[in-house]
Length: 398
Image (cartoon, rainbow, N blue to C red; front, side, top):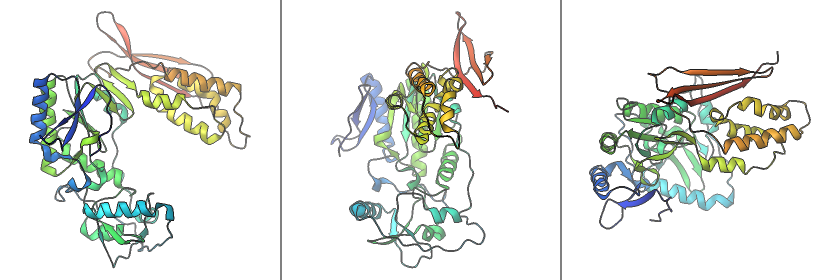
């Protein structure tokens, strides 16, 4: 097994003498605390996976994926040629999924799609949509910020841990040069997969959510204000994983650390920060040369707009190249706005989670074209105002 390099605050430890079962933990733990952590992980070893064949699938009695079809939907049969350059990749993936028991050969399905790495368009069109909501990212981050210890956990091949109801498996049939197969476990690319997975995870951990853990899809975060409390919470979560056959990916789990990346943000006892690796990518971009590149930049920069005072005011010139029926022109005001946003992204403040027991302070500003606001709280003897969030928007010209 090839292990990836780790940053200095992390290290590998092993759950066995032969060093066949690695896990990732904080590198600065006192040996007694490390032993306590490893003892808990060894007790719950079944909750951690090191390869795809380790996935038994979540117990079907707890949850299964079903396809509810739109009225008058008809079976679909599609067959397309395949790019020969990816033939070996497809063969390797099919062989791996067969060996892991994720797919099986099928011969009489009325629903057949060509093998692909994009969503299954025709099946998705015929499927009744599931609108189970995903958690609000801001609320998840605010719940996690300010804690002393975290365990960042990740479901192994997420969706593929959920069984498909036997009567619906034939609807996932795909064909390739190596045969015709159907999925036993839920594949990626299904329109209802995110909602289905979120509902399943919520049902499994419902009594632990907002008490000792938060989850967003297959990203689970266990937290507490002390090492021992976090270890106890971790044990609860791992026990639940074992009881339901939910398996975690060893390579993406960081146990008992003091900071980590969650949903594109760094959370720690300091508060909420931007993910520096994503900021480095954004700030390395050159001036856009098309509407598509402007849209892309605003999308990536806008993800962190809560960290930037007057974001809408600064970004206003960048809306002009996006106007319809106007020749694209990235002029001097656009360049100034583009560079200013990149500069602001490299000097963002650390945001604090709101303390609902304290009064809030709201500061507002307005111009003819934009509105801006800062939500904060005065904390401590110094009564220094800590920023919770910046907000801004463009005024409707009409």
